[in-house]
Image (tube, rainbow, N blue to C red; front, side, top):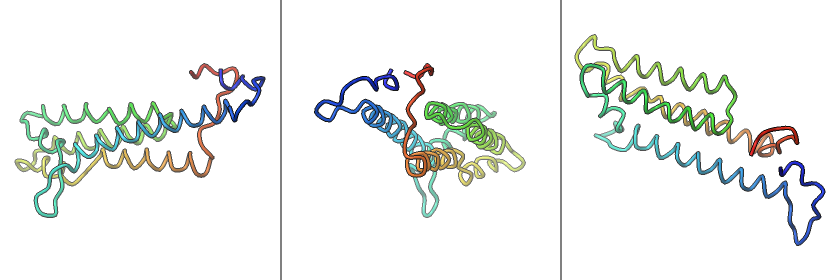
Length: 156
């Protein structure tokens, strides 16, 4: 484990702790870019005038709640990214709440297509991306980056 490599000599600038931090930063940035690409495609890829919408609103047009079910299931991809980034449980729970609220609002059919219109304005994936970005900013600026695993941890 890298946390246990303190016995290694520092040769030619080799720093096991720094190497771990660089790999972890790169992994987190890759996950962040995947989340941003997902949000671009589902929330704001297309536009009509000042209104931006994406595949989430288009797929939500599939009748009988099938489209809303599909977009709700797909939105859990953001939760998986959050879990991969080791977000605290309460932030993951907030992300799930955003997704479920979007799914419930999307299925409202008080007036025909009212749920789909709400879906254009309520952007759960964008809110979840904001949670992820704020967490990473805090992790990398306030806390100084990812912490090294303890020698007893199972992190690999």
